[in-house]
Length: 56
Image (tube, rainbow, N blue to C red; front, top):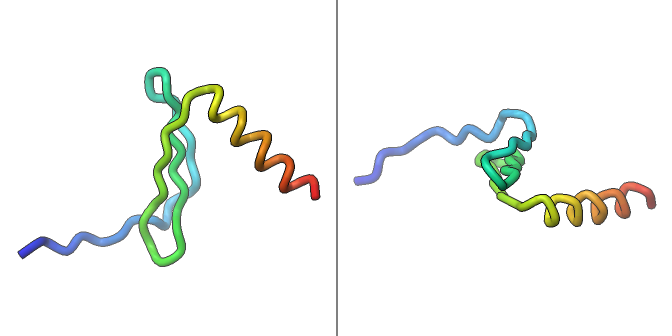
C-alpha cells in the first residue's frame, strides 16, 4: 500500500537557476506544483509570450 503524502502546493511561485537550467515551480489549485525546467532561450521565449498576454 502506498503512503499518502500531503500536497504542498501552497508555497509561492518561484524560479531558481540550477546549473545551466532554470527551474520554475508554480503552485496549482487543489494542491501540487507544476515544475518546469527551461534553458535561457526557452525562458526568454516564455517571458515574451507572457508579456504579450499581459499587454492586452
